[in-house]
Image (cartoon, rainbow, N blue to C red; front, side, top):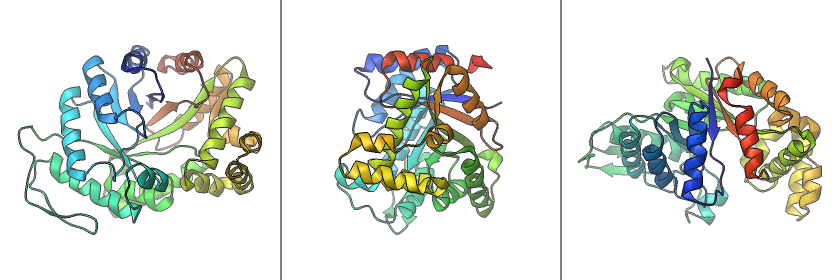
Length: 333
């Protein structure tokens, strides 16, 4: 049985609104809720708040930056949120992006995969209650251990797109969270995950693959697809190089060049118009509720996928998000 997860939309007006969305997702039967952290609300505070005000739904964060918090602090965060939530937490990590690392965390974006690997290693030591002892390229030293709180296992999921990053997830993490993949490209990238698991002498059965499918399910299919095109234009044009490169590798190089060029020139409308119908059909789920449900089921049918995370588009309003959440609730069968 494939889980149906959901991503908390960003930009909600208040903490009460955040809680209301989470409680509704729980009441509709969603298995897990993940929340973003970029330059908005602090993700740890949100996780603690939701741990106290939900009962069953699993809790995750999308991506904690390995530059935003020290690895030991991430370990402390993990065991504390795990305690607060009664064991419902999975930590999301990733390499982040040059723009966020340099423009927000004021750090140099150097050897991101190595930094991610070392961060995972140190989190493992801390959450196991071991004395910190590490000799790495980014981090070196130790001598202290977790005190005053019981060590707890904290699964680590890696958000990754490229083959080497996905291989790293298979070798060292507990799960992989991809997004903006066609079904065929997702199946290809799962081979990288399996190769990484083999290198780590591990089984992919022990890895949770939760693919994010950004969705808009409305009776007005044209409106849903417009929201999708705007999101794809933003992800390709403005969100850093990794999504653009990943989408280009999936057969959309000409379109991504056009989108990025228009966005860089400041012509947002031309960038949106450069998003092709095939990109909307292949990378996201946008249209009538039945069409969107069918797209989601195609991802759920991929061998190796354990969960589909329902995400949204930034241009959707609260009512459109509610309609989509209802249409894709796990009870839809």
